[in-house]
Length: 222
Image 1 (cartoon, rainbow, N blue to C red):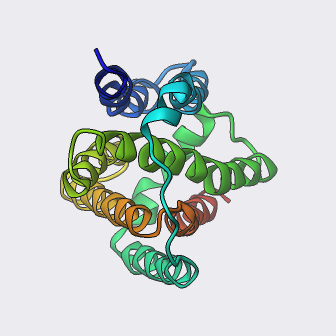
Image 2: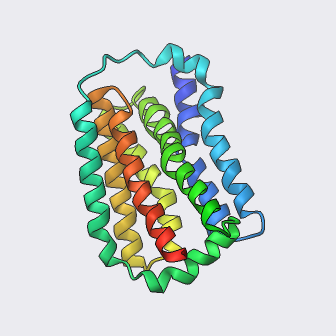
């Protein structure tokens, strides 16, 4: 099997399901080990593309970077505005107890611990997801598929684990609405990456989205 096919079949396709499987274990199947499963899943997201780095270097052709600074700012503003607009749709009181239970499962008992986790989630975790979903999965899918099909398939998989997480807090209609919005955001981020040849626009707007989520969680807990 050629290295391109090997990377696509054994590296990229399985990667579509790792985070969703992890979310099912650490968020849906609640246990005393949830936080450890969460961290293990994140380590897998970091390590899996690195295991294929030798092949990736050969198969991922270098892209010429396009203009990205203004697009980065625009995506940040638009994504933040969308998130803030969606907040009134959420009954924060009704999900307060669930948020507290999940925070306790992840050992986030104090303001300082939550702030550290929020910074990790907003700055580092968003970078991890962009590196994994856009750089590795989306770009890897393009080894065999056109960029629009790759963006659609990668974004559906990206939305998959969010549907699971959201289902623990919201009704089915809101879960479907918010989960689909995540998929749309993923498609936009894939498009931005493809057009600009850099992760900066998607990364900065991803930070903005996660910061709003963490800020909402802080407001509920403290």
